[in-house]
Length: 128
Image (tube, helix red, strand yellow):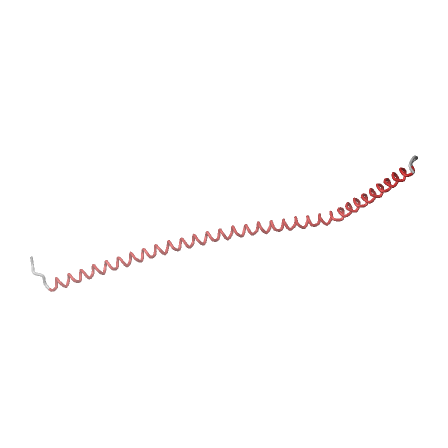
């Protein structure tokens, strides 16, 4: 074995420095690779979330369209019901009037019959 020279020691330090440099460089590159992969994953997640929100937006828009159409249908049904009611009111009023007139005639006939019966009983033979 030969004794260690200053040059050997210096070369050893340079070699050690170079290995540390390479190790540091490798770690830095690995960190950049991991960061890039994480960024890619994050971007994919955000893109997925955006797509999900777009689908939800479309569903809500479709539901709003359906509700708007249902509302229009209900408004038409309400208008028809109100029109039908306005047509029924005069008929109802006429029916009530006819019923009232019939009741008045019935009452009048009944009073007349009671009066006739009463008069017949008063004038019947054997009554004083």
